[in-house]
Image 1: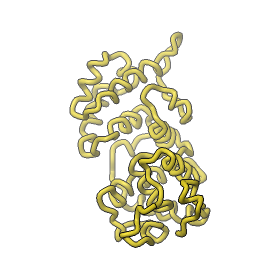
Image 2: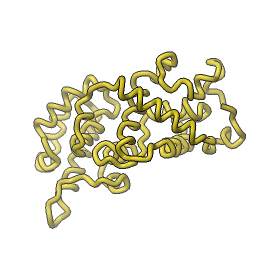
Image 3: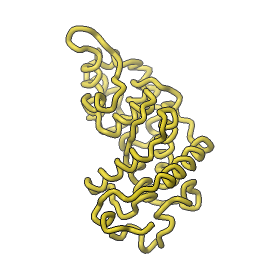
Image 4: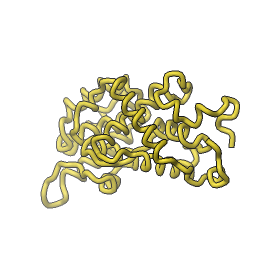
Length: 242
């Protein structure tokens, strides 16, 4: 994929609609064949998805799975979290580290379950409304909106940023804020037309980054989107060069 002057300056790469469509089709077909059976993929409950997304931040899946079940037995709803003390929530979080996530979950639960007059216990469905809640960033808002509510919402975490930059814009670095903004736009352009397909698409992006297109090893020989990947066409010694 040739790089234009605009691309070298960090502008949006020129993305072909057909290439985006082909990438998405290959990606989703692979996911349907190869996806791991994870507990949070069996639910559309927004609270449970939120808990899983917070736990998965900087924590390996193998550590999260047992803690996820244990935490939900203790706190089966946002209301249960809100009625507990912050200390009790952090105690239940013990072993996962990064306790700011637990504190933010408690703050969020208290905010969502009461508006000062009438109780409410449902997370909002729109990404911009989710982002207004304590501890919710752009990625988590997109994940909850997509996975719980079937919204056509983009999400970009470390794995997704790595996949999209390698496939469509190898010159971009997800570590640079300006480049990350471009990668978010690539994610938005690549979304399927429907929310139901978006659920699979977003899960597949994360799965590909976790299992195949990893930070340490890019398993290009196993990659289902190799045929449309710009990095796969670049000689190894030239990858990542500006």
